[in-house]
Each structure stands twice: as C-alpha cells, then as structure tokens.
Length: 78
Image (cartoon, rainbow, N blue to C red):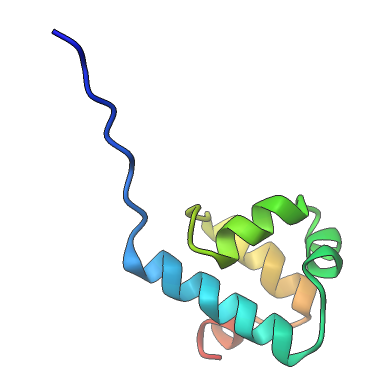
C-alpha cells in the first residue's frame, strides 16, 4: 500500500495574521527586505508568513514585532 501525502492545511488564523503583518508593513511604507533584515530572517520566509503559506512560532512573531518597534499585541490588533 502506498501512503498518500496529505498537505498540511494552514489554519485560517495564520492567514489572517499574515495579512495583518502585510497591511501594517505597507501602511508604514516598509519593504519586506527591510523588516526581514531587522528581524534577522530571510525575506522569502517573511513573504511566506505574509501570504499565509507558512505557520510561524511565537518567537518569530516577537522578532517581527520588534523589527517594527511595536509590541506583539499592537501587531495583532492592527
């Protein structure tokens, strides 16, 4: 019997969080590259988070918020 690979479905809240991060970044006229550099992550990974294609850990959310110079709660409430 062959195992079927089941793609892990990203939860809706991850997609919404990514959109919130993207909206905040754009409202401040900051590029993905700038925030990724400040957060110490790869721009491609940040792009995946913004598009809701990859789940993020809380520690990553904290690094992104720090890169914006705001708190996590401010980022979540944007």
